[in-house]
Image (tube, rainbow, N blue to C red; front, side, top):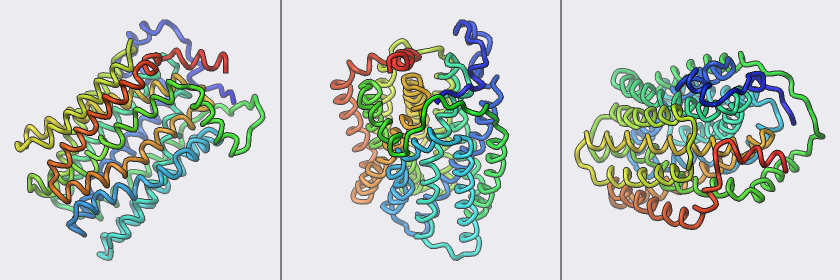
Length: 435
């Protein structure tokens, strides 16, 4: 399918001159992208506030590190089950409408939990069920949102747009986490869920205001199953993209549980702090993340993106070990900030490589493979929770960091030569021409 987008109406001059004119925030020149970015601010503020309050709610209801990790499992299970299907949906249907549908579901989950908590009838199983539904919405949200970005900006602004999208998310990791921490001092968890539901009203409005030309059909549409198989066939014949997806498994299995499992446990278990500190610690990771994403946004391109990915993963692994060994709160906060910086830099480069190495009509399906990787997070989360429950939070962090460092070395030893073929903005053109 060929779609004339806002991005195609923008003259593609010399990339260096475009960067000089727009600077770090050059992608915000484009109206649709500004609306998407504004919606991302609200979406992320709500998401990161929930990252604080949902584990706190489960921990207060159960007092168990295992059940906190099981919460991650319930939220990510739909991503594993429906990730690829979500990619096909994003490529077959109006991505803006898909995005709005997921936002309505997420808003409903927040309002239901607000009612349950405020009326004093909430039980832990209800928290898990709403996590399952919000996880389902997230599974369909991410491929639709990410695959909209290339429709909004010219290719020379793509890495900048992806990085700014990540920056918006992590700006709210600071703002949302800190706000949740402050609100937990004086307000109930139910009140914060009510606020989250209201925030989503603005997110839905900003998505509704986007406008795109009606797509022109240039080829006969395949069946849903045919589109599903086409995504796998493309990945099978494009080894650099396949390797990129496989490398992401290392981050998702061993790295990502640090936010959802270890941040609450560090605050409540290891340092014996009050629950507002879960928000402050999450804000520390967000501070590092915003620095990392703005650094990526300010760059025109990476000459050796595979080397940047290796560096990000290796330093992130060291941060997990650092957090496990630290017994001083300021040092732990620095470690959280550095971990946040490395993780978002890694994801910004990975997403940009996937978008530039893939034809537009396959963006949703290829990006949904990262959703499959995200769906593996529960495996690492449950493993981390079992270690933390059986030994200590510190033991869990050191174990996860050591395993991540080991597997990073193995993966790059085996796949490094193939990954080195990926260059920003080059592979996709060659693939479309001969595909």
